[in-house]
Picture 1 (cartoon, rainbow, N blue to C red):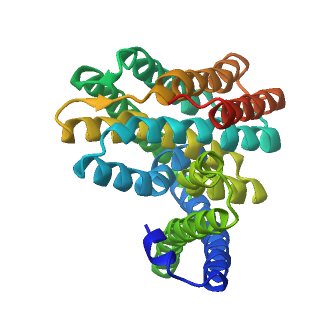
Picture 2 (cartoon, rainbow, N blue to C red):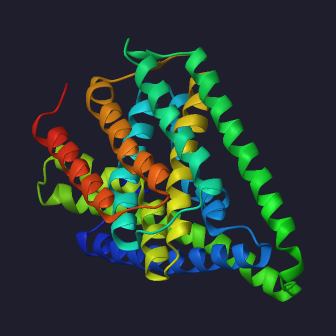
Length: 327
């Protein structure tokens, strides 16, 4: 977003902006997670559900806007690659780190359906993209999956909120205002800070003559998932593992089952699938997702070996993209 303005700046100013971006995402993440955790406590809604809905909407908003703008401008072929690449980074790197640091028991009522919907979305994308394009039928199926996800989240939240209503302390008006402002400014801090960090980091990497392929799968790839990454790291530091897992699962469903169908409808019903997305991104996205979801559903908990395998698989994926690119 800011990168065109950065190109004419002195390198010292760019480094300063990088530092400002880092400060914004750290402090923004702190406010954001505190506000989300507070909302979970006063509403009685589990932190996994808060992470899968409210937090995910906030962290995926930049990706949604970028994808929609790119589609309107005629770059619809980038939509699938960007979305699947983001989901792969979210699951392999960010959820992998979260599981390694905060492995533990999960609630089947909160997790199972959402995990299954995430896998089904990845399967639909993989199967319907084999011919090199993505049309209205799979977009409709994905949108239906998102509606199921949204309905189940609202239904579960209402049920749990009603069950715990008698034991909750009603917040004051001042607390509501402070909590809301912390959530909004925390989200803005993460989003703006991520933009500053990625754009300034890209300029610095170019100045140091780092290859474009390396920049693409490091700074840019991580940058598109930076809001989820910051939220996860902050949640881990504050021992809010359920919030981070819910955020990743919810963000992945929104990337695949909401953003892509919207882009497909805007583009007239067809999204082109690039070779890298078809042969690298989608298989790894589905494979890492299966490693994350299937054992967790069977065992009713996350295990550290899952996180380790997911991280190693993501490293293999990045190495393939860098050293054996498909053009």
